Image (spheres, rainbow, N blue to C red):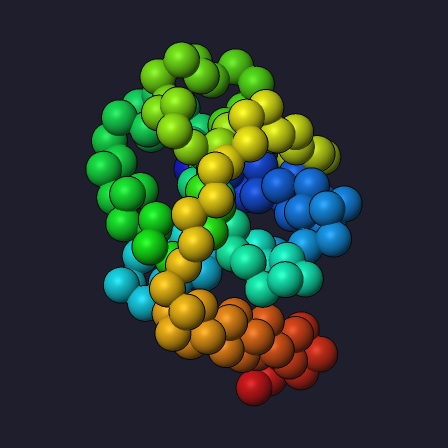
Length: 143
């Protein structure tokens, strides 16, 4: 496993802890309907989705133009970076989270951009089914 990949896994853990503290449930590695895989997606009690794109380095950010393709699949969008990331290169119009493997902090809140209702319903079902499947795999690894 590459260093950036290990670091991203650690950041995802800290982000999940942040969402848990905010009474939201989250999944890592969630594929949205257009085929793109969100690093972290969270669902709140109102049914609103947040997608977090993790960037471990400046090179990682500069080499990735796909992040805009997530915007139609969430109500809130954040970049999450480690503390040593040059934050000034990130777009101001999206939220910003600084994370490590133990915790995360929202430095800039995301503006709400409501999802399409039919897309929300379909994604909520996919989220629930994936969460149930992952739980099942933990309790019965042979399936």
